[in-house]
Image (cartoon, rainbow, N blue to C red; front, side, top):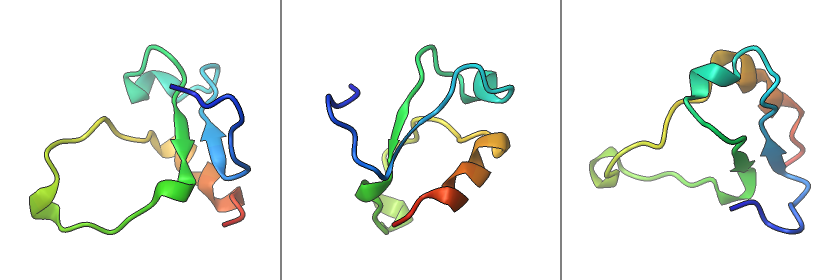
Length: 64
C-alpha cells in the first residue's frame, strides 16, 4: 500500500521504464528506503522479487 504522504527517501518505480516488466509487478511498487536493515540469511522466509538492473542506479540519487 502506498502511503498518503511518501517520505523523501521513498522511490516509486515508474511502470513506463523499459525494465519494469522484469520486476514481475502488476502495479508500481514503492521502495521504502528508510526501512533498510541487515539480517541473517537464515531468518529470511522468502523474497518478494528482484529489482531490475535498470532501476538499481536510481538509488544513487537517494539522499539518506
